[in-house]
Structure formats: structure tokens, C-alpha cells
Image (tube, rainbow, N blue to C red; front, top):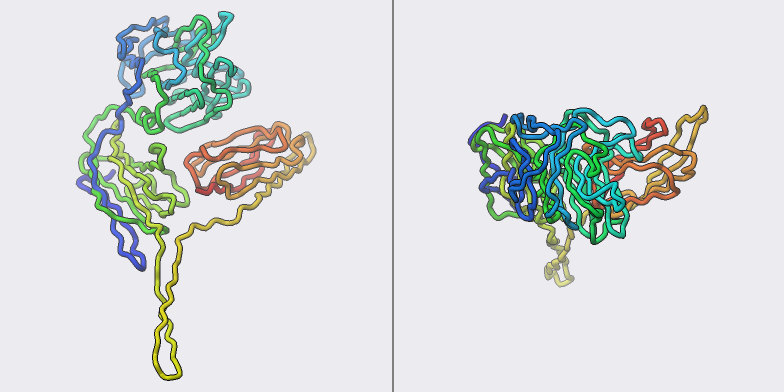
Length: 484
């Protein structure tokens, strides 16, 4: 627990030519403020299936009220594999949208099967097309929660979590679609994105309906609990999606106070953000950073450490100039965050003077002053090729192959030359972040694999490239560096 009556300070280690100090103070606001702009439908399921935006009632078929994720009775709906809730679809046939909901699977789908969680469109009518969220188990083959999008003139595609489903665990699912890109989030984290087949118009088929708990033709019925279904007519930002994920009901007072005064952090210096609670008790503290695209959780890497303590350590770089930071304090079902503060990183030239004494023959002493300019520069090792030599046993034979990964460090796109990839049929490559999150997972089925790293989460730092044999056994693991 963190004690009461504390302040948040930013301290910077002194450097040679400058004395630095940085202190932060800001008023606190609730983190759990759900976005309302563009909301066209919201079913909180508090005792009934009523849309709190239009006051329209959905039609409930065999679904029953049950406890929500906070334990509140009659505040979510349970689906038994033969149930559904049909929403009025008038305002839901959108080309740009966000779908958000909470889900808990109580019985996992059979292998090579799936559950449909939400479907808007028409299927099985001869003119098929829908936008849907589903839970897939070893089908296609896919695993985990997924988002399927049908597009007029663009076919259909699925972007998924690629992680085994877990029963009796709440998950927050969000999909956003625009005419140029679709994104899929699980528990506030971007799982996948795709712009390959997104068209200007979403395909909702010939006779669209909006169904929760099954597909529109009542196939793939869901088994579990669904709550807080929201639909927006715009694509929410990462920060807004996180606010939905953290949305909660506070059971005790909790607040933080921060102070700020104008200050500059030296490039390359260590900086510390320190947070303490003014009112209430916090069971957990987390830190977030906004690099220009919305606030995201900070993880321990080469530049940040102590991310879940009250003292965040930052090793400043030029790229961090004007980054915004905030801290989030948790207590049970309560989450509060501070207003953001920005840190300025000084990357200006440092000028020193070297005085050289020159003696003339007439004994006149002349001083010649040389001006030396030292420029702050971030250095990275020259990009190199990472060699991965693999060896595993298949059908009694030792299979050997060499994979080449380049460049390393990588900034935008990394290439993987899979060598004699035919030898590695049914093998796969996985890229994992330092905090264990799977960023990429794909089969070794082509001579050259290219991966865009600009969307990697949490950003620059160290990642692992894991190679798995056909029996899903890890046979090698190497480090990949993502440069800022």
C-alpha cells in the first residue's frame, strides 16, 4: 500500500554544465470516463436490454440476466448456446465505427469450432455480408478472439488475437473500422491491424439485423456472459479505448496531487517521476506515456524501469522530447489518473572553450581561444544480419536450416530469409515483446517474410524472435532490437 499525504515530483540527476530540477503538480480526474462523442447505441444491461441512447428495447430470446464483472446482480446477460439478443439496426449500418463490449466465455468452443459474439448484417440470405466479433478455437486455423469484416468490393478478412481462449475470464473487446484501416484491441492492447482489404463501404448484406450472442442466421451460438455493448459512428482513439477498459465503479475515495514547474531534462540523463497518494490507499500504480498518438502503458525496457512502483525511472533521449506522462492509481474497482505533464529534453549543442597559451619570441604572451562544439548524438550499432541456425528432429531425421534476419536493429521493416523453408513445413516464427506479448506469429511457408515493425507495442526496445518446430517446441530464440 502507498501511504497518504504525498506529492509527485520529477527529479533529474545534475550534469556538468547545468543544474536541473523538475517538479510536477496537476489536478486529478477520473480515468474511468467513457467517451460519449459519436455513441449511437449503448446496452449496459442493467436489469433489461434497453439502449440508453435511443431508449429502444432489444428483443431478448432465451438469454438470462446474471452478475456483471463487478459482481453486481442482474447487470449482464448469460447466453446458453441457444440464446440471442436482437438490437434495432437502423443506426448501426456504418462504414466507420467502433464496437466495444465485455465478454466472459463459460464453456470453450469445441476444437475446430467458434462462437459468434456480435454480428451486424445478414448471413444465409443469398446476399451475405456482416461485421462480427467471434471467439475461435483451432479453426481456419485461428485461435482467440477475432474480428471479421465484410466489405463491398473488397471481400472479407479476419484479424485476430492469436492466443488461446481462457474460460471464465472477462475480456474487453474493441474493433475500429475506417475506409482505410481496421484495428482490433483486447483489454486495451492493440492485437492486430489490417488495411489490405478495407473498402470505403462495409457490406451488411441484403436484409441486415444486429444480433448479440450468435450470428444473424443463428449459427455459432455463444456460451457465456456479455455486457456493456457500445457502438460508435467513429473510430475511437487508443486513449479512449483504454478509458473504456478501465471503466469501473469506485468503492472508496482515491486521489493524487502532482506539481509542475518549468524545467528541462538533459539528453541522456536519468530522470525520476515520483507519485504518492493524497487521499485513500492505492493497491497498485501504473505509468503511461503519450508519444503523440494517445496514452499507452509503459513497460520495463532499456529506457524505462520501475514501471509499477511509485518511482518511475526514465533514461532520456532526443525522441522523448515533449512526451507526456501520467500515473494511474488503482484501489479495487477504482482507477484514478493524473492530468498529463510534458517533459522537455534538451538536445541543444554543448559549447566548451579550450584556452591554448602561445609564447612569441618577443616574450609577448598571447592567448588563442579555440571554440569546440560537441553535438548530442544518439548512437546505434551498424545494422547487421542476425543468423539463426535451427536443428530439430522430424520423422527420425535431423532437420537443419539457416534463417537470416535483417536489418538488426530495425526501424521500419524487418526481413526474414527462411532459407530452405520447405524443410520447415508446419514450423512457425513468433516475435514477442519484452513483457511477453506476442506481436507476430506466422508459419514458415515462403522464402522471404517481411514484417512492418512501426505498429509494434510497446515501441522501440528489445524483442525476441522465437522459432518453433512442427510439434510447437521452441528450438531457438534470438534478440531483435527495434530502434526509435
